Structure formats: C-alpha cells, structure tokens
Length: 258
Image: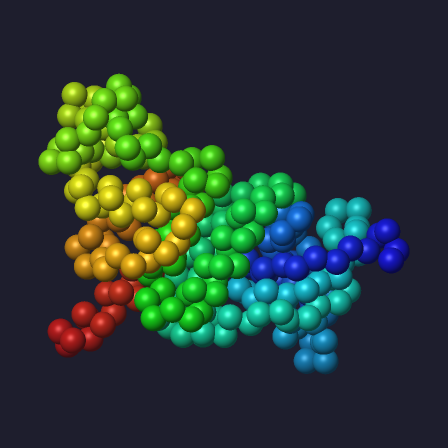
C-alpha cells in the first residue's frame, strides 16, 4: 500500500463541521492513539462515508496522511453499538465515556489497554441491562490507565491503616485520608466504607467481581460524586455529558411529580 495511506480501526469520539460538506473527527485507535482526521463530503446525501463514521461507532478506516490533518478515504462499520447510540437509557453513559477519554488523552499516544477498555465498555453499555455498571467501571479504570490511580488501601499522606468508620477522600492528593491527615486537603470529604470497597473492586482489571455487586441508589450517587470530583480535578472543567446525565436522571422524578 502507498506509504501515505494507513489502515486502522477507530472509534469516533466526537465530530464537528469542517467546511461546507465535511466533518472533522476525533477518533481513538488501537495503535495510533487519539487522532484528528477529516472526512470530506460526509454531509452530502450521496456520501459513501457518512454512515460509517457515526459518533460512538467502531469502524475500519483507510486514511491518507496530510500536512496538518489526515483525510479518511474509506470506512466500513465494524460495530455500530446501536443501542448505546440511540437508547435514551444508554446514550448519555456512552457519551460520557467518549468525552472522558477525549479529555484525559493526548494526541497520537498509543495506549492499547485504553483501546481495549473503550471497546469493551461500549459493548457492555450496548448490551447489559444496567449501563451504569460498565460506565462507572470505565471511569475508575480510565484513572488507573491514565496514570491517576487513586490510593484506596491506606492513607495517601501517612500510609497508615484506614478506619472504615472515618475515611476521607481527596481528589487533589489522589486518594483516601485518615482523620489525622484530613487537613492535608481542606476540601477532602467523608466517604463510606462501601464506596471505598466498590472503588477498590473497579480498580482491579477483572470486570466480573465488580459487575456482580448490587449497588443501590445512595451508593451510586456517592460513587458518582467521588468520580466526578476526581475527574474534574484532573480536567479542571465540568464534564458536559455528566451534567446531561444528571438532567436525564431527574426527568422521571419531575414527570411523576407533575
């Protein structure tokens, strides 16, 4: 093959308009990491590329190297993840996964473990009954694989043993604190022993043991708060998909009250 061309699988994380008829895509690949590429003419009804480059879809692409941005010349859908892309109960979790991966990765940095995590998570969100479980697992593992693994087994400051009845968490220092070290971060907050246990399970590479735990609404809300604080501390900004997910969760309760 022409050395200017390359083939790769890619998941479309997001896309936006480029010129009159094109789209610029941000994709994640197994061997090239995150890329920004151009898909010319995909807004035209006659485009053969358009249906194969949908957000959150996994495609096999051929691209031509360019001076600034590469250009997609061929694309074929490998997995559409139709439920994850269209089901209101699932789509915001899938969007959250894509947004966080985009925010926590740099361009052209290969990370095969992150690729495997992304694809397996989209499959789970697409097929499992409860998309919260794989989406939450993804967030914890994303922290681990991006070099931000939280310390959950001991006090991150003094290394001392944790008392389950009095554990604090600091996104800034990256883990749990004992009462004596709580002032290492005045913005640290108390967390339950069950939340710490669930996060410990999610830190481990094996999905099975974590996925079998039944998690009630209060614990879900607590774990979400911990992860949002941790990821927000790293990205230094609000995650838009998380805010949309909050709105989606509140909608049923608001409808029942009206």
